[in-house]
Amino acid sequence: MSDEPRFQGVGPALVTPMTDDGRVDLDALALHVEYMLDGGVDFLVPCGTTGESATLSPAEQKTVIRRCVEVAEGRAPVLAGAGSNNTAVAVELAKGAAEAGADGVLVVTPYYNKPGPDGLVLHYGAVAEAGLPIILYNVPGRTGANVVPEVVLRIAEEVPEVVGVKESSGSVDPVMTLVREAPSGFAVLSGDDHLGLAAVALGAHGLISVVANETPARISAIIHRAMAGQLDEARELHYRLLPLMRANFLETNPAPVKTALAILGRMGDHLRPPLAPVRPGTRAALRAALADLGAINEERT
Image 1 (cartoon, rainbow, N blue to C red):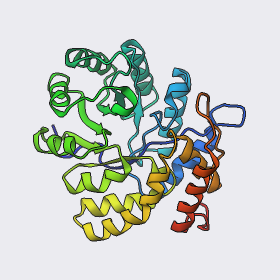
Image 2: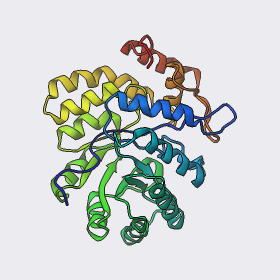
Image 3: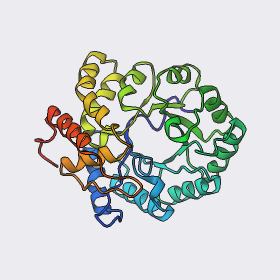
Image 4: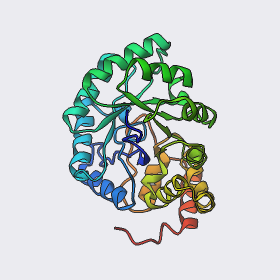
């Protein structure tokens, strides 16, 4: 395994723009991907939780991934969401991602049925049939089950296509264990914006970020400076961005971040049910955080 993970730095967990009648807005998606790339992100992550994957059909997911690949034109690798608690569906999604040109797949641990270690090995082994590198996604707040580092490392050993983990348990403790014990080239990525700086300072390889949708240049500066050991500068930027990071999770993601993007004039805030528009207090908090950054007055590109 190479010493350098393929997926490192900042990867925006891309929102999926929708029209007011609920269709995927591919034109808005293309503009959004360009904005991410202009902001200095290192890879793209369509069709994850932030991309409303739970309410996208397999055909829609494939279309979204293909558009990201087309717009990126090789400028950044595409790590496509391909998660399901139904192993057969996860395999189908991963194969669709491969056909759409993705460079890897982000695969959440099965929710609701909550398999143990043996079941997880079977699940990821099946997804590996798609032929793409896999980043395991541990997000117990969504799945109801926490995959501890020892199990992550067992899965990676038994399924070599698993080349990294997006760790979103809300703690840096598993990050430390994984950084210390993972084999060379295994990507340890934070999935929590507010812990991204801390994780990278402890040796993680980067961040899959929600806040990157709103301000890719700022979060890229934080993570890139942290990776370069410029922690004082990174810390100063982190605390400036922290109110927006927190506002993004006042309600269920991605409703707040889509609202923020609408405030910035970048896309509509349309969501698919069962997600609903944010409450007025959340909208006000997002506007205040964006205004404090000076983001609302910035020239749009």
